[in-house]
Amino acid sequence: MKEELIIVLDFGGQYNQLIARRVRDLNVYCEVMSYKNPIEKIKEKNPKGIIFTGGPNSVYLENSPSIGKEIFEAGIPILGICYGSQLMAHILGGKVSPAPSREYGRTDTYFDTNSALFKNIENNSVTWMSHTDYIEALPDGFVCSAHSESCPVAAMENKQKKLYAVQFHPEVMHTEKGQEILSNYLYDVCGCTGSWSMKNYAKTAINEIRQRVGDGKVLLALSGGVDSSVLAALLSKAVGNRLSCIFVDHGLMRKNECDEIEEAFKNWEINFIRVNAKDRFLKRLQGISDPEKKRKIIGEEFIRVFEEEAKKIGSVDFLAQGTIYPDVIESGAGDAAVIKSHHNVGGLPDYVDFKEIIEPLRLLFKDEVRKLGSELGLAEYLVWRQPFPGPGLAIRIIGEITEDKISILQDADYIFRDEIANAGLDKKINQYFAVLTSMRSVGVMGDARTYDYTLALRGVETTDFMTAEFAEIPYEILSKVSTRIVNEVGHINRVVYDITSKPPATIEWE
Ligand code: XMP
Image (tube, rainbow, N blue to C red; front, side):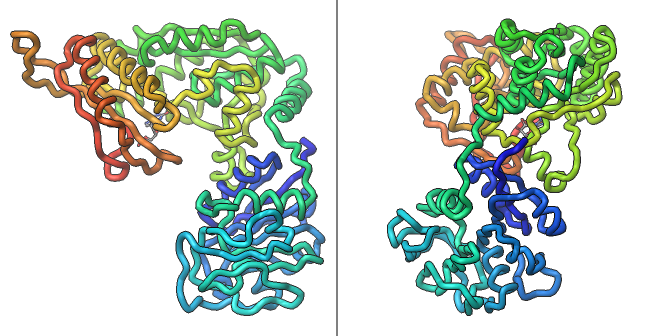
């Protein structure tokens, strides 16, 4: 794909992906690369600019991440951020030292608005700082272009060589003019034109897939999740019904979900295969309470069903995978191929007769995948779907799984989702669901004693699902959900809300 390219050169900072996402938000394509790549490899990519990320080290220590001086002589505009700014100063002959006082958090910063970087912003606003070292002396040829109370060089530049550096983090939301500063760098300093959009991406990707696939056949395991759904839509536009999508209904999806997914794909030109496999999954899960055993059984059974269906199709040329850019970065900054396992069971490709893997989403961030889905005309329900675990409701029913319990949980979960959507919280709370516990307790309904299940509601706010805070759902909404569930769903007489964060808890209960 011939795009204007910005390279985000990663020195180990915690915000490397965030910088890349901000650049993409400004309609410029960028890739994250490790600083360990040879400079030749970086130059070969012909970038319009390079952004050095932050990093946890001190530039003057031995073995700190560094780069050869020739990168600054390549005529490519560079923006150093935090550690990246100090590295630029250090390598080019300035002085970096431990700061007399560490700066952390929101900081009043003063800008020289004659600088291309700070054009069209006020000369004073808040930035986000996080550093213990600072630039004490500028390298030759540089001028200072911003300062704060305890940071004399909050920004520096060598206009002639197009080298710019900021001590603060423009990519972090707390930097009030961060997006404007990045935009100035991309458009004014690097001369980008802003050609990256999901509309353009769709067009190019469809052409590329057509060229690669020719008149071959493609197979995709469609889970109904955002990535596989968008992938199905993209491939459908590219190869039509030479794409076969196998969608396994294991009977553990949310209420109406399988029909909704089938409905959403009904009118697409694909070979959509829905396998109703509930009975065989439930049979194998009979009497099983241990969560890891449940996961394993479901994973194995999924592979078996998939394999049987794939055999009916016969040999295919390509197996499509929904790998996305964060998987690529995490596996080694774009160098390694990633094969995403499905339902936590690796090795799906081993079981299926195919020649090559295609991963048409491997350059996209999650929010771009969603935008692409909308661009392709995919149902909003699928584009904004919250994450749902491969083993489905099996790990939201504590203890043994029965058909009755699945149906109780589906009904209760449906009411919870309905009320969250009615309250307009469905895009704010990142994941929310009901859990059917194995606990039963005494209640009273009308004049009669009941002895029924306790249902737990869970809602979390998170960006990475590695850590999460419980969502502060207003009491009146929780109250409405609880009343509706107890009145409308049988066998639940008590509803509780989970107020633990992760850690120490996990998001799912099993
Ligand atoms: P935990 O419970 O580990 O969940 O805090 C983190 C995220 O992962 C999802 N999750 C799973 N996804 N198979 C999946 O495909 C699984 O077995 C599984 N277990 C947890 C969970 O929904 C949350 O988004």
